[in-house]
Length: 138
Image (tube, rainbow, N blue to C red):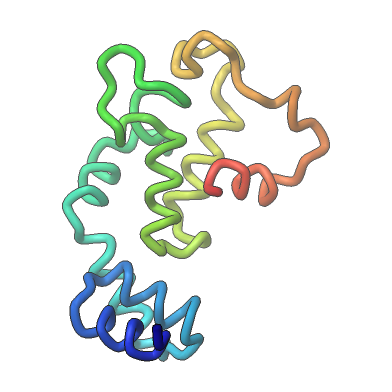
């Protein structure tokens, strides 16, 4: 199968996330204006709006950290929401990531939002925040 034909087909028929990922990650050719326009379109998608609208005041995404307890919907799980946002192609320097990381690092270790397990600080002592963010997003 010809990769150029596949890319051309997707660029003509796909939504903003796939278009962005193909131009940025596969072809490696995207102008700053085009990148910014696609980022704006990605952020306007229904699921993205839901995540942003349900962000807590401290930056936490959703109602729990790792599992769908207390009747949480898929995007009410912080880990799932972060992964989804990253996979959609939102740039890692977007404030949604730093807000969620800051909330994670500043919440009480035994906050019920951690699903009864406490947060993972002890497991990641000495780990840079960037590496910890990568762990959550990938």
